[in-house]
Structures are given as structure tokens and as C-alpha cells.
Length: 423
Ligand SMILES: Cc1ncc(COP(=O)(O)O)c(C=O)c1O
Ligand SMILES: Nc1c(O)cccc1C(=O)C[C@H](N)C(=O)O
Image (cartoon, rainbow, N blue to C red; front, side, top):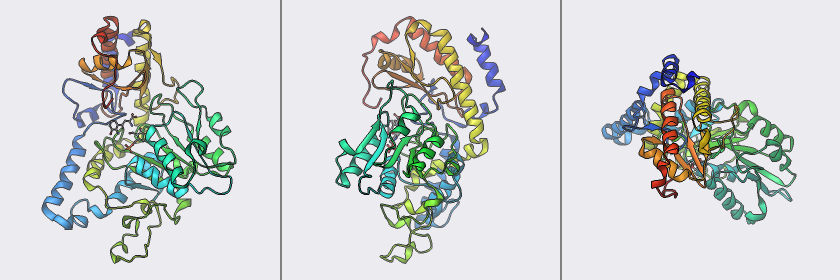
């Protein structure tokens, strides 16, 4: 099969319309970066907008709030609007603010309204720990025991969730549902439309964590009627470490009082009246709390330009091609290596793949030594994300070839099978 050959990969790169975007990014020297699902790479455009905002601070001081190319006062709203097409949001439904976990706190503070027997929050046992910690603490704040009131839908196999199991758990005592859009380990994309419909048939508000889906898969949150969503911008959106997150509030909830208030949630025109009676924004802007982290928002401006230019449909299409190619190569080249494919092989896979192996921690170390950057997820997962904007088919080919040599020669054996502090 020609799939084996480097020239096949190179031919696919020649036909790839997104290939020129690789040059827009700084790729760490001598490496093949497969970790954009954890921290996306710096682009020249993100670097440019970061410098532009530094320069407005340098040259305008306090006037940077209202002057310069990107007046800081309106930036969260403007970047929010640019993120709307990525989540299927309408005017005013998206805002750039906070971080994933703080936005989740804000949204649960707003949408979790326990009433009588309806006191439970429904999540899942495969969710990212930070979300679970936040949900538990929100229950505690309301005086409920998280062991009893946080319901975590079980996975049948430790990898995936069945939508029907989640729907079955939407019982009359559930007051709120918070689920991932794409699971951080297996990369499974949940059917958000189906889950939203089922939740609403039972009168339960529902929201999704889009950390691993935004910039990798398409969403239609407005059309699906999803109540809320929240995300980070440092993975597939390439905003940089700790870049500002985002949230979505369906327009049917405009005018609702956010659980956590602060002056940046005010209408722009009245914020500086300094009145102790707040005049909140009508839309998602109301969910901001304090001063925006302007320098952590700055790279996102440049990075989003590329998403606007290319569009999510083309990004998703290439991402699916890259992951399909990687899966084919793994199947052909690594048959004897005892990997278990831990991600969906159909199109319910997100932007990354998960290879399970009992030696995963040290296989990751051997890959890094060889210039391939994966990440390890405890207890036995190697995540690999070939990213549409900066990875090539050739990158995928080399990754699998290097992995094959590592496995054939057991080159991982010289490392300890233990994760690093930041894995
Ligand atoms: C699914 C998911 N939720 C939440 C988080 C935590 O996000 P943050 O640290 O930005 O609050 C992460 C990643 O760190 C994540 O992958
Ligand atoms: N947020 C991270 C960090 O501050 C350091 C290292 C990794 C991260 C991540 O985002 C991890 C990621 N959410 C994951 O899916 O595992």
C-alpha cells in the first residue's frame, strides 16, 4: 500500500489547501508538535497582536482603554464576537472572559437553582477534574453534600460515554447538567444537540465545556438551544499559556442576572457612572466580572484571524483527514506493539487521538527524545493531536515511523514509566 510511503504523505501535503498556514507558526526547533490539544503553538499573527497591545500600553498609557488599534475597553466583546462562528453563536451570545474554571463557576452560580427535590447536578465520571472540583464546591456553597448531589454518569468501558446513559440519568431531581463537548482523554465528541433536546424535554438547563472542541470541531449552540458553554483559548485556538477563556449564553437568557457580579459586567455606557446599583449588560457581556486580562487576550486577536480566514468546516475536514491517516498508519505499522486505540475511530472523534499502552509514560519520554511532542494522560494514555493549521501529513508519517522504531527497539526501556510533574 502506498500509504506506507513518505512520498504519499508529501503528495497529500502538496494537495492540502491549508498547508501554507504551517509557516504562520513557530514550530519548536527540531520537533514535530503533536500537543496542540494541551497548548497550541504561537503564530506570527498572535505575536504581532501581543506586540501591538504592549505598544499601546507603552505609547498611550491609560488612554489605551479607549484609543489605539484595539481599545482595551471593548476588546472582550470584540474577541467574543470573533469566537461566535466557532461555537455557532449569534450577536452578543459570546464573550471573551475569565478562564474555563472561573467561567464554569460563574455559569453554575447563575443556572443552578435548586428547588424542592430538584437539587442535583448531573456530570460524568470521565470529566476533567477541574470541572468536577468546581461543581462540588458549588454544591457545598449551597449547603449540599457533593457525594449525594453530584451525579456522575458512568462510562461502560472507561473511555466513552453513551448519550442514552446520560439521558437516562436526567431524572426529575436534576437541576443542572454540565458535560464536556469532547472528552479530554478519548477525544469522543458528545452529541450536544441530542443531549440538549433531551435535557430541555425534562426542563433541565444544560451547558458544555468546549475546551477540547473549540477550534477543532464545529458547534451550532444557538440552533441547538444549548443554555450555556465555556472554554479556554490556549489549546486549539492557540492563544498562549493562560490566555483568556470564553463563554456562551443563549439569547433566550439575555437579561438574566448572573450569579457573580462585578463592574465589567455593566453596560459600557454606564460602567463609569460608578453607581452602587449595577446596570448590567443585556447579553453575554453581563457575565464578566473584573478588569479584562488584556495582555492575555492580545494574542487571541491575531490567532482568530486565521480561523476567520479558513473557516471551521475546512479545519474540521483536514483534522479528520489527519487523524484518519494517523489511525491507518498506526494500524499498518504498529500491529505488534500492543497499542489499544482509545479514541472513537468513526467521526465522533475530536481533534486528538489516544493510544493506550501500559508503558505509555515512558513511550512519551522516548518520543520526546526523538523530537515528537505528545502528552501523557494517566494511567496509560498517549495523546496525539495532528492540528489542521500547523501539522502536515508528513508530520503524521514521521510520528508513526518514530513510534515504530521506539517500539521495535524497545527504546522506551531506558526511561522510568512515570509521569512528569506537568504531564
Ligand atoms: C476539559 C477541560 N476543562 C477544564 C480545564 C481547566 O481549564 P483552566 O485551567 O483554563 O480553568 C481543562 C484544561 O486544563 C480542560 O481540558
Ligand atoms: N491548562 C494546562 C496547564 O496549565 C498546564 C498543563 C496542561 C494544561 C492543560 O490544559 C491540560 C489539558 N486541559 C488536558 O486536557 O489535559
